Length: 562
Ligand code: ADP
Ligand code: MG
Image (cartoon, rainbow, N blue to C red; front, side, top):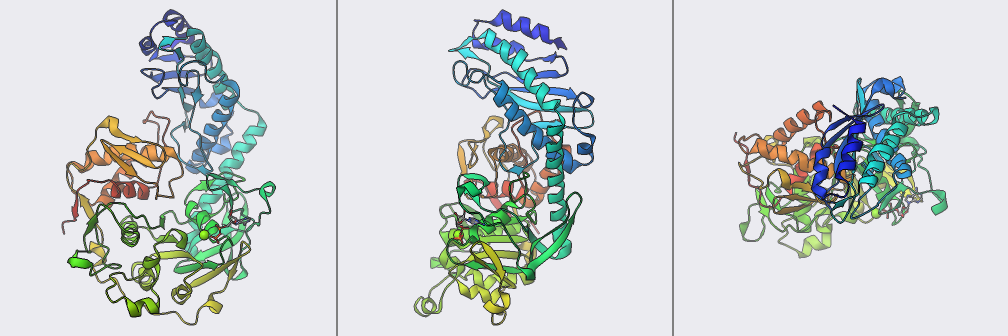
């Protein structure tokens, strides 16, 4: 291993030379208090920045021992330390000084969710920051003095302050870990209590705006904090905060009704993001939803491969088969039907549906329309939703302001008024309506597809995220903007990373897609990020990885061999 002094001398030697000379920096260096790994040096000042890791022995950090007690707390600590490094870097790094982003020191920029991130690895031995440096140049000429300041003064300063901190930050770190641990405990409590979601009293659900997911604050206008209706109130236990009371949404069919602008979608959004933990003071930090809940929406234009949508759609014009339906350009209703059947394939136990993002003809058909339109291939969701629960055990939470018929198929009806929920099941419903449409096919053969060999074209270089909502696989771009439960671009990066492995596995095997994904996910999550030396990943759910494959044009799928 080289000494920091040797890095300094090397930078002096390459000052003023062509950019390629930076390649010589790829080495390990012993600094005062940490080891610096220069894993990858960028090819030019416009390329993705150079990848660094700074490793500090755990005994040389001020991380409180309480943080290291279990995996959940460690995950939260890694998330916290990423944020600490980011803000510290904002204070110490002198910013852009040259061509492109020359001079920047960066790390993941997390949002409101607490996620398993590859940006920090914390274990019994060491704390490691995976950060990025844009090695500075003017044009393609190396700026030695700036590089020296970045790597020998700014970076060590950031690492020092992000690993050795005072009791104020230690307390914040402990609160971060406590909060996440409590969230996980609440999520664990759902199923034993027959619940699919929990929203604590006092929660702040509304966000600043559609593009800013920080909590709405009183300076933005009056904010109504959440209060459970008495009938749904439940108290659950947490390890740190003790008992927490709030609204439990039971398994079954739940309808959230209410006038426009009364907070229905805001509540559903909190539920759909409740599959993740959130920052202390997010307002939703103790809102928890079963981990496999899937938001279902209409998504016209998407491609569909061999999906059995026959529970919803039959007798299409010219006898098009709907038990194995494919299209390159789905309609609103066929896309929503496919989204549900794919969610079932991915083993979702809770579907979340908002009329704001649904196809009307998929949701409901009224009597006047039934009398006039004779050739209607669609069985609306309202006729299937009960059997989804009764026969398949799949619950749903459905937001509607317009379709009161849904009251008749609901186990629970919640009315949102002035942002507050009321339980009105008895009032809204005369009797639970029986459904005439049942799933007729064998649940075992329901959407278990295999991917045929040589599915996605692309090599190591071309499985990449292009922002949060697009993936590039070879020459193909996959639009995943409808996957609302992807929280960050780093999850999209991770989906690209996992698709590469999935692609390799599926090139030879014929396991069902969901089983193959299960296996890859298992291997991936059990290993942690210790051996994956990249700092730009955050773990998505396996559902979103499968849903990305479903949206990839040109993949070939077939039925599972019996
Ligand atoms: P709906 O789906 O019922 O039409 P939304 O959930 O979209 O209503 O909410 C309408 C508006 O009210 C949004 O701008 C949202 O941010 C705001 N809002 C929602 N819940 C609250 C609340 N508890 N306190 C203050 N404002 C809220
Ligand atoms: Mg709405």
